[in-house]
Length: 482
Image 1 (cartoon, rainbow, N blue to C red):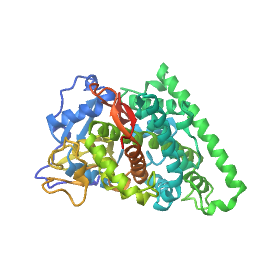
Image 2: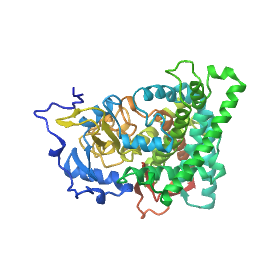
Image 3: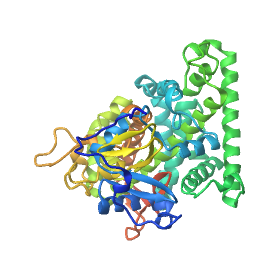
Image 4: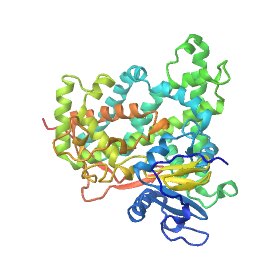
């Protein structure tokens, strides 16, 4: 067999995975007893510091290669999806749950779906959606003003999850769910159940749920059924609107309309199946809710820890917005340079996706390591950005490192090593929307509030539930002192 090559550095001699360092494993179990799913990324990063940028551990009898160096990770990301793909068991899990859209698609399926999904995130579409985004941001401000008036603590991550669901459904589906004002909604709990279950099943020794259902598996089935029913209702409503106004097919007003138009395309290469439409709807809902909400929650955490950062954000927002209460366009939001730097630094230190699950599509080479087709890998995308070789004083929160021109004596700064949105052909399609959301919420908070931690002595922990979120983040908003 001809060996595909993804060489990332000159190598004097080839070796195989049996030569790699790593933690001692137990017979049959491997390293499973050392793994807590909610802290998995921290375990891998700790092993990286001990064993280096290329090591192996075992999930039962399956070896997993862990890659932690930028010179190794970046070429792997560039070679997707031809040479590398997501773990096939992960894709099977996602497809089994019914939300196998562009996130889990590979090959030609990914190429076809990616083109459609990107249509929701063009600059023109973001400008078209900005008024809706402003309305949703003002709703969040009113909710936090009410909490400030009561002196009540705020579960920041919960509120931001509602915010991002509202934004995603408005931008991608053309719907106003308004979870912010409606408060409790089953959808939020259902999405949390789906993510937690997916994370748990990744580490299961075998797919037991296909043979026997535990209470958590029955709860997942119920959550998936309810989310799917709700999304199918949205699909039917949108389909009826397209049928009443066929001219909209030429200029779809939302991603969902574009997907449904593609469902009926004359060109078989462009046509989507109904399951692909539903899968992408569910994927966007799930991805749009967690990753951006986690990032903005961590941003609030850093703002609360650093009053000097809050003050500098406020000065910039006051100067740039003038009489406006929020940025008036995506381009206006992008002019908030320091606020953007705060978001970038938050993503560097607290990436919502600190690890990526990959496998080789064919026999290949990574550095001097031979890998057989199907070999599983985990890329430590967050850990790369925490290394001094890429960023000066890498453990510190220093937004000014992202400003241009950079401060004198700022030291090492390698933006290519910041991989929160991935890299290469499969870079996150929603990154532009995510950054605008962060700018809108950051500007709103800086303009209207002082933010502090409810209990500064209580640590805010990293919790991995497919994405990495803050656990125990409660903040207090007080009206801005002017």
